Amino acid sequence: MTPAVVAAAIGILAATGVWLALRARTFDVVLGLTLLSYAVNLFLFVMGRLATGAPPIVRPGVPPTLAHYADPLPQALVLTAIVIGFAMTALLLALALKSRFVNDDDHVDARPDAGPDDGPSGGFTSDPAADRLDGSAGRPRVDANGEDRR
Image (cartoon, rainbow, N blue to C red):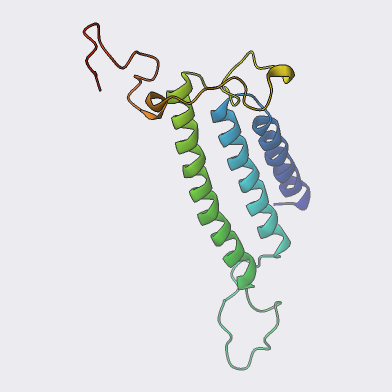
């Protein structure tokens, strides 16, 4: 691949990731952060000047320079970034699902009508039933006889 194609791919991944991360839906934000991590991983690979077909182990009689061997540092960095990115994506998806079930909405601020004058709390009140993931957060916790339905 030519350097221009790789640079364009990194730019498109980064631009799409930023655009998705700035959207108002939680799934778009998670997908945008994932695309940004892909762009960073590809950038790290390109900056490492990867040599195809180069052995990673020093052999006797061959000078120990990067012209003859593969550099293991970019590979180790990208492998670590992939593992961290996977864990970050799993955590963000868990938080997005929790927010979706609690607020019955996929909006990142949990209210599509939130304005700048709503204050830092946004009018939310604490409700123990809001921590339930079975979708019963909006329903009353007691029935008509006053008995607890949990």
